[in-house]
Length: 377
Image (cartoon, rainbow, N blue to C red; front, side, top):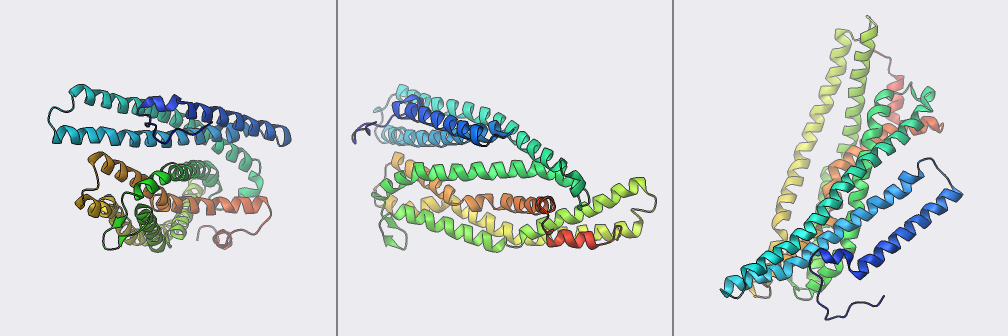
């Protein structure tokens, strides 16, 4: 398919979604997905392959579609806000109907994006539950091997659900971040030809791209450094909570269990770990919130030299700010997902004991310590 002419006007509005390039992509994606599914159905059949292959492909497609909706909205920003600037600077040059039709273009994009997003969320809910079901069935088939592990019931009942939902959330966010970079990074490069000056630094090539990369790397490194202790504390938190809960369960059926001395000691462990967790989250949240607040004004700060020089129209400024925020947000995947990653790591460490037991490998050190500790102590 030949590329569009260099001087061709961009398509503004919802009609972009059924333009020729989009229709060709829909066909290509459907053919590639079903070919991939057919290959694995023949050479490596699996009871969950419809959900794992076709379901994952559908989530990838809706993620791609949401990114393209953002691209369509960004294309709408330019002419609409230029029209606003024209109306404010030259009264009577723009009619009310021009604004109404411009708003209709946006509403068309938004309606389609919201509809696809709601249907996608509904499907993802079922997708996550099927994933949890597959994990549940697998672990229950090995229950005689697993039942002696501390908190085994909770790991099967709760951790499988949390693992599937959290990993899906992180995976979709990562895919969306990559797709956003693919869609918006070339646009940011093109804007960098017009905006080549940064505060303090001065004129540099591809200024907007370098600014986005620097700011994202700085934030990622900062939060990784200040949050380095949190995954281990979250895991240990699950461990002491499970020990406390397990003794209470034993106390329901045995009079000699869950005595006051034992429960005070177990709860003291819970309190100690929570207080350590709260302390470490204080400076982590200070760093994270300060960075995110600075992030709100960073795009405007880097545009100050160009604004003062009069290089920007209102529409172009809104487009650049939006594109910069999209690219910057994608580069900041770890920053935005750090607390979720911490939670996932703690869940993974708990489920890792199951996998080690099933495959005859040594248990993680904390689980070995727990097994060596006498019950009720």
